[in-house]
Length: 262
Ligand SMILES: C[S@@+](CC[C@H](N)C(=O)[O-])C[C@H]1O[C@@H](n2cnc3c(N)ncnc32)[C@H](O)[C@@H]1O
Image (cartoon, rainbow, N blue to C red; front, top):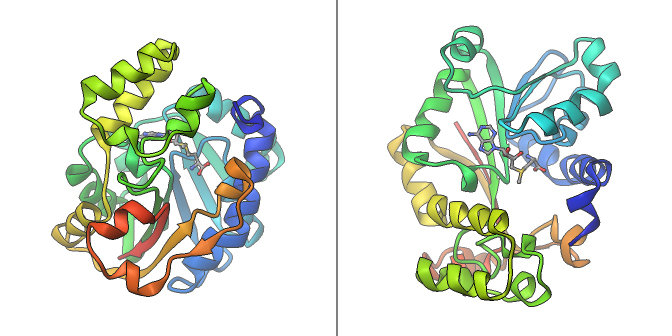
């Protein structure tokens, strides 16, 4: 188990560093950020992704279903919360109350390492449009399903089940049996099975975006995901451009993709 899996402050610091070096500069290429730009992060966790946006003067809201993580975000960023620069909510964005309050409110919505955890993305992505101002944009960063660790198996607790690539692609009963035989905790197996159900490929993601009436404004595919610096000690590397043009094959060799759509 990695230190960020047990220490929330380590996780927070990694979110801040990654957001400031990769996420924010990527978003700024299509959406200038100014004082008062409204930002929503869905699946905010400890809220670290939002800190560089707060420092730019943006008005931020972080929402997550995990109450414990929202409590940590409120604690670490208490002065930013007290100053009215950010609000953290443990709420489902489908709640009528959430939609009533934030309908057509946000300039930018961020989903970093979240869309692969959300069921029924065909319904979820068009729903996000209701929260966007006209001309607003949505950022997605996610690991495509067929990449070596697309099942998030690095979060498994046994040494070999956490470093074995590609076996998440096996039929569900085989994948589950391997995890069980390895002695993984039932809660970990349940989490990994959930991701198997909500898996998303580059092709399906782009199809949903198109069918939602959204356009891809910018994309960047990575051979080495910028967050692998923290997971595996690897240097981030962009994907070789010609590989990004080969549908399906690219999914197996691309560990992370960034998109802004609008
Ligand atoms: C892998 S973490 C990513 C946290 C943070 N965005 C980051 O990049 O470090 C995924 C987060 O998404 C949250 N999540 C998953 N589905 C969600 C949903 N439908 N609404 C809000 N949060 C959700 C989970 O509770 C979890 O905290």
